[in-house]
Image (cartoon, rainbow, N blue to C red; front, side):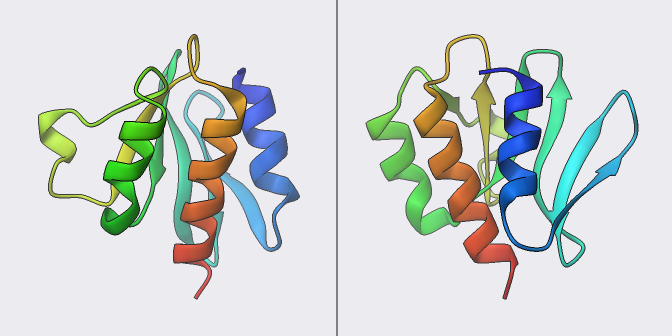
Length: 100
């Protein structure tokens, strides 16, 4: 999956807007983070902690949680190997959580 595909999908969701910078874009709903570029191959997606383990189990090659993120509602998605449907699922979870 490419960053452009991530952005197009995020922006297809109601009220999601691109923010951030040119070099580090991010997408927000109601000023709450949905997804942002971490590095050229990694995006950070905000997901409910209650759903995070399930995502990691279902898509182990797509996501990871580095130690610095363990206490946060976030996963990293590795764009060079992530299944597009996995990333879309995580973005949907972030959008649902953040839009309220």
